[in-house]
Length: 216
Image (cartoon, rainbow, N blue to C red):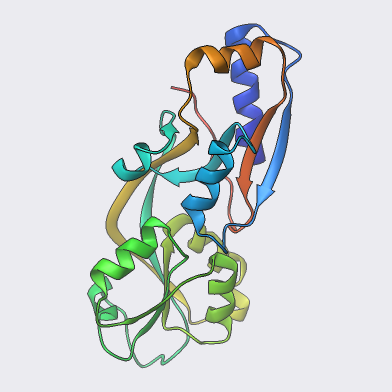
C-alpha cells in the first residue's frame, strides 16, 4: 500500500508542478470499529487526506466519501480451514448450513456477503483479518469469507501450517480504489499549492498489499 501512496504523490507533483510535496503514512487498526467506518472517520476528521486501502466501491459508501477512479477489481473468496475435513466445500452455498461456523472481517463487503448468503450458519465478526487467520490455525471456524487475493496470498505464505486448507472464489466482484472526504476542489488545490504534506492512510489488517495504483 505504501507504494500506492508514493505513486499518488508522484502523480500530484507531475499534475500540479509542485515538487516539494511529501507524503506521511499513517497506519490504523480497523478491527475495533470496523473496516470502512474507521477509514471514513479518518478522512472526515482530517486525520488523513486520502485512504489507500483497496476499498471496495459501494453506492452507500460513495454517498459518504469521494472515491477516485478504481484501480482494480476484487472478488469475495472463501478460505476453508482444516476444521471437520470430511465436510467438503464445493460451492459457497455449502456453508449455508446449521453447525457451520464462518468468520468474516467486521463491516467489510465480505461481512455483508456472509450475512446475506449464509443465514443458517453462525457468523463470527467484530474483528479483522489477523484474528480470522488465527481462527483458521486453531480450527475455530470452518471458513473465512473475505477478499480472494488477500486470503490467497496469506494461504500461499502459510501453507506449511495449513496444508489441507484451500480457497474457493465466488461470483461476487467489486471495483476498489482510494477515497477522500467530501470536500471542495478549491480547498484541496489550496493544500497542494501551499505544499502541505499529504497524509496517506493505510490499513494494517491485511496480509497482502501488493496492488499497484494506476491513475486513469
